[in-house]
Structure formats: structure tokens, C-alpha cells
Image 1: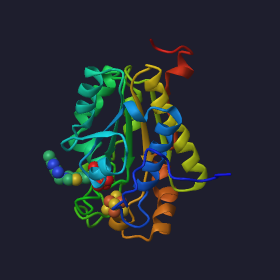
Image 2: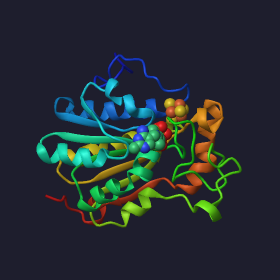
Image 3: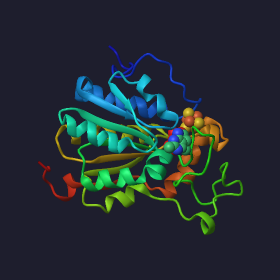
Image 4: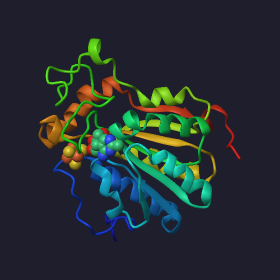
Length: 252
Ligand SMILES: Cc1ncc(C[n+]2csc(CCOP(=O)(O)OP(=O)(O)O)c2C)c(N)n1
Ligand code: SF4
């Protein structure tokens, strides 16, 4: 009996992520969702700019690589051109919540029938650890060497809470991948976010609290602990919007 195997929707390419980085876990969860829904042949992913820029090498589905922050706009075009396709973006917090915030907010407000996987690791990973809109108060980064000073640069943005105030989205949930229980919940959320699109329900976004041991200057284990101790208190896990629960009926 097979109890564990690589999802079909992941290629055999060895991932380039740093040891202990949780991007790889989230890739796997996305691939499992695609496998379980049987949508591999009609799924198109939009890769970001950021550490996941080479996501196109890791999924067996068709992929487009968008300019930094523009993934929701590209996804909108790909989806509208052929609504039978299942279209997802995979974006970091620099990509989605800094340069791409406008695309994020407007695609959510329009209720585009796309799925967004949002990796919140509270830092710009690829470019060497600069402060992101999601960096925590007091967090030391390359551009906040004395810790994020909220008097000077303002407060972090809670993307899920903010988007949940819009009428457009179908489903917004924040999850984490720092322990087995949370990974299992993250899997359920990502599966639901894809299933919503298959069912034509509209915009779904899953925010995943993720680790960047390299730029946090921590071991992989310490980085997972920091998600629990520092990130989850500031970014509480949970469902921020689910029209299935509030309206009880599916949007046609
Ligand atoms: C238009 C543009 N501006 C800036 C950059 C430089 N840049 C590349 S990746 C990146 C940030 C990546 O951080 P994030 O999106 O949080 O993803 P991570 O690497 O942490 O997964 C930036 C600013 C770029 N490539 N293009
Ligand atoms: S720099 Fe950070 S986010 Fe990028 S691969 Fe390394 S650990 Fe992951």
C-alpha cells in the first residue's frame, strides 16, 4: 500500500529553496490540491518575482511568469480569455503586498474567479532580506537594522483582514505551515481555494505564514518557532471571509 508519494503535479526538478524554507511545503500542498481535483490538464499557474520565481520549473502544469506584483492582472487575463482554465497565482509579500498591492486589491474587488496563494514570510527573501509591508514591528531586516520603527515606516499590513472588508472575494483564509497540524489545515484551505474556482464561486486567497530562515538569521527549527511566537500573534490564523458560510449559497 502506498502511504506517501510525490504529487503528480510536481516535477522531479530539485527545488532551489534554502534548507528549512517552507516554500517547498506550500508547493507540495498546491500540487496535491491540483491532483485531488483532477485539474492538472487545465490549470495555469502564474509565477511571481521573488524566491518562487522559478515555480514554473516545479509544477507540471502550464505556467506564466509575471513581472513583479503583476500576477493577479496576468491571472485575470488568462482566466477571462479561457474561463475553463483553473488559474492560480503564487506570490510573496513583497510581490503581492508592496509593488502588487493595487493588482491584489482590484482583482479581489472585482471578484475575479482566480485562486491566490500568498506567502507571507515577513521579508523580501530573494533580494536579501529587506523590510516588507508585512515585517513585524521591531523586526530587524537589512533596511531596518535597528528593528522596524512604526513611527517612521508605519504598521504592517494585515492583508487577509483588509481584503475581507471588500464585497468581491468569495473566500479568504490565513494559515501557517510551521507544524503538522497547521500544514494539514493549510492543505484544506488551499484545496478549498481551488475547488471554489472549479465551482465558479470567485476570488479565493489563502495567506500562508511561511519561514525564511536565511534572511531571518535563524536555523530552520528556530524559524518555525518564530512563526508560532511572533507571526501568529500578529497575524491570527482563521477564515476571514467565506461566502459559503455567510450566504449559505454558491455564487453562480
Ligand atoms: C519591478 C521590480 N521591482 C523590484 C524588483 C526586485 N525584487 C525582486 S524579488 C523582490 C522581493 C521578493 O520578495 P517577496 O515577494 O516577499 O518574495 P520572497 O522572495 O520572500 O519569497 C524584489 C523587490 C524586481 N525584480 N522588479
Ligand atoms: S531566501 Fe528565504 S524565502 Fe527565499 S528560499 Fe531562502 S529561506 Fe526561502
